[in-house]
Image (cartoon, rainbow, N blue to C red; front, side, top):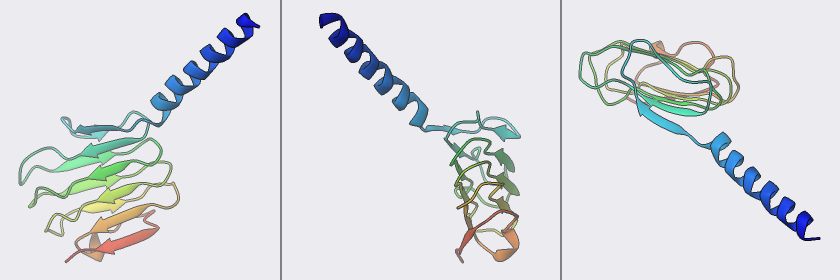
Length: 126
């Protein structure tokens, strides 16, 4: 009985640890061009500075890709599998937002001309 209780407790602990790891969202600011995620659920943000172009690839499931803080740059954001949030509403119309092959991708843009392929829902900010 004691052995079974210890085993059940260990299994519950391992499930909790791996569930937390699996569903954790990694948020980071891109440092490279292009910027690639790690096939997990991520929040990737553009590099700092007006006039600094970015190309961000969300390869995981349900990523949030953001390039809305700095303007006067050409940002290209491409979602991956799953429902991505792709945000390029930075006050200029030089960018491109694509949802990728997943379903339920939301693209937030300054103009319809910034909408690429795979955007299942589009919000235009002007």
